[in-house]
Image (tube, rainbow, N blue to C red; front, top):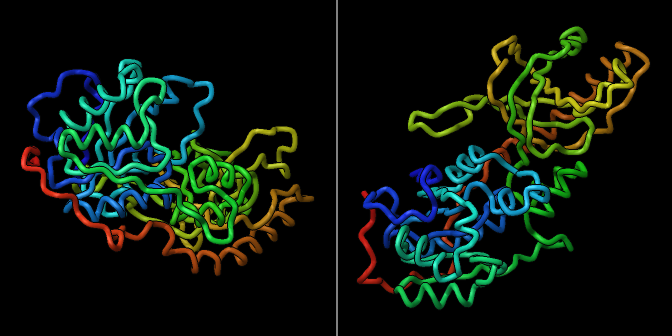
Length: 358
């Protein structure tokens, strides 16, 4: 997968003669925020796959809300590195990250389309969701986008809202955040098409788990935490792949406690995420390393026990309860590659489109 990170240069600078910054007519570009890469986002990729030989996901960093309304910006469902890995799993051919700033926020809809979609990227088709808005004050919608692109010989497609079977939940990042925050990680899996995973760094802790016979990795993260409790999960060690991208190097079935350690420190109130990997002795190899905790199911509330022996017995039961859930969920750690939407037809060839970048 090509990673086109254009965040280092001013977003409104004139396009440079850098072929790596262009997609070209062999690409259909999916445009959006893509926080979580959930089933709705995957539907855009599926539609784009039917419209061109290659698919690009195009998004902005920082997020518009981070610049325009930082006090109201919601927590991320994934880090940029996690988004990159999910795009690879989905079979996306290019991930293009553009810089968002107040100058971009002030662009008119026409200027936005001209700058990014026509002059800079020039794909053969653009795919967006039904609620896509663009331009200053979100003045542009899907009808305006289609008209502006058509004038440049670029096709467009809109993916309509996806109805979830047996649910009144609206598919979207907001709903997934609510599910995760409430501890309903299994339902979040249904909307994501994979397990909800939290990235963080392993730090030194009080080593109480080691004393109980269940050593834990203490994970510090700025991501969206689920509700306090005990979870069946997978612990993954992250690193760099041969092509320079981020990847999972190893993973282990695990159980995690997210809470304030009421048995030992009832007055603390501070939340800690402690993860015990099953059937492996990791020692100190994870300290200061980046890891990912993929949540399978919430097993129980966090509890205060009478002492270490009662806590040790509860952890042993948690592990017993987690094993069948983990065995059944291993295939959900990564999303399945996205295939073309049935019945979709590629757009007519645009003779004026630029050639694809090498």
